[in-house]
Length: 381
Image (cartoon, rainbow, N blue to C red; front, side):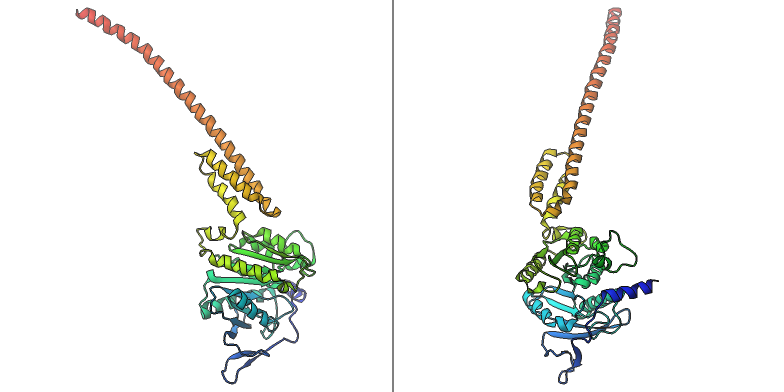
């Protein structure tokens, strides 16, 4: 049954260009692989490598001399790296990054048939190539997923805790949700990003056109709300599913995002400082939660909460979901202070009562003791 469902999903989800837009040839002078019809470029490698499912994948790797980050680009549907080639070159130049783009199984000149699980194996093979051949480290890699490419991107990102960042370009909540408005995830659905995105620990940038006729903009907005580490999203007014790269804001916002995360210190599993500088609203919410622990200084921690609440008010409307948690923390702190005050008062009353009672008993015992001493002196005399 699972194989039948996978086959049906493949027919609905995957539309590789037929025929492919390019050929892979070997240069006569150099013996290097080339993408035909494009001329050889010194900073571009054309690669072939195997996946764990036995398919041979074609990829291109674009080097930038000033790069500190590497983008692994998973393209959208109905395209291949031949059609994406010039965009890859432009992105590498403008963003100052190394960039690897690859074709899924059954796309372009990659072997095999397109399927959800093949794309997971495809992106794993590309990522492994970046690590082993080019020495890229997890903390320097940015995953970029466009449309159906958001599926393998989110799946891999959920399993890489020290990843630098991910970009979701016109992403989908899941395959089934593109066609139907369903409220839950079904076992036969594919690319269930809605269930995996909360597991992603790195900063996430979401880009979506407001007039997307293929994948509604609500997909991108809901995914953004579910992210652990939100970066300021880009909702391109009037943008559709296939033209976001033409907007000047697109490259400008991407540049800002990459510059921000490159300036941040490397991520550590035991610390969130590196992501706090990316996601300011989250920082302002976390701070009062930290100050609640200082119950011996309730006034100061309350003042800090008030400052954080002001910064929270400046957040976009949809981030105010966290305000409920903040208000509950305020109520809990006030309740804790009240209980502490009552407890201190009770202890004080008990203490004074105990002292006064002890003094009274001591005084009563002291009187007979003095009388006995007086009689002893008289007898001695």
